[in-house]
Amino acid sequence: TQLLEQSPQFLSIQEGENLTVYCNSSSVFSSLQWYRQEPGEGPVLLVTVVTGGEVKKLKRLTFQFGDARKDSSLHITAAQPGDTGLYLCTTPRGKGSQGNLIFGKGTKLSVKP
Amino acid sequence: DAGVIQSPRHEVTEMGQEVTLRCKPISGHNSLFWYRQTMMRGLELLIYFNNNVPIDDSGMPEDRFSAKMPNASFSTLKIQPSEPRDSAVYFCASSLNVGTGGLQPQHFGDGTRLSIL
Image 1 (cartoon, each protein chain N blue to C red):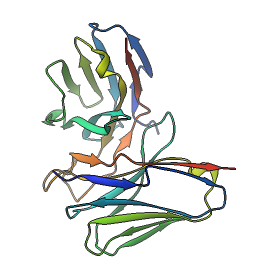
Image 2: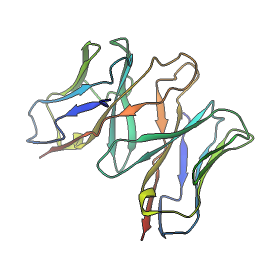
Image 3: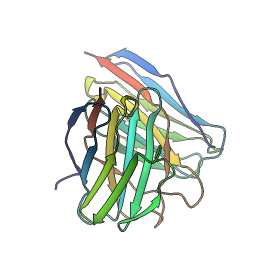
Image 4: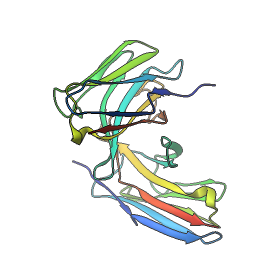
């Protein structure tokens, strides 16, 4: 069974700092998504990556998919309090199981003003 | 546009009682998912439907849990009888048909926070 390991588990930083969070697996990802979940709300999709080595940018967020497709990172530049939340990575459980997603336990980010 | 709507937002009940959680997916979405989120286990898929048909219920913990989707705009997740270990936040999500053209975005409701005393 594929497991997703996210690190760090918790991260508390000051506004304006940069940070990187990671998502790793012992197996190759077919594709990967990052979601952000704010307190009291459901997760919201940030990005989908499918190609090894792929880099996607979303304003101050940069997503990287490892060449071997076994890891991914999310880098935030000049973090703001609005970036506070739980960052989750997810991938299909197996081939042909696009609906059956497994999630990492997430990185809980707190950005203090 | 309205997102995924879940009710109730909070439910507190005593063990042994029946609990029914409700979900209205986004209009036009063919796939619907029920998840459970706890601190210990994170976000876990319980069951998902495609075109109102259950496709994968391997995540349903035991027979006390059941889910139905009588039509394209409504689904329920029922727990009977409830136990304290069922306390969690339950999310419903919907998407366009899974399995068509790659990984689809899932749109989540705001969840039902369930406490079983």
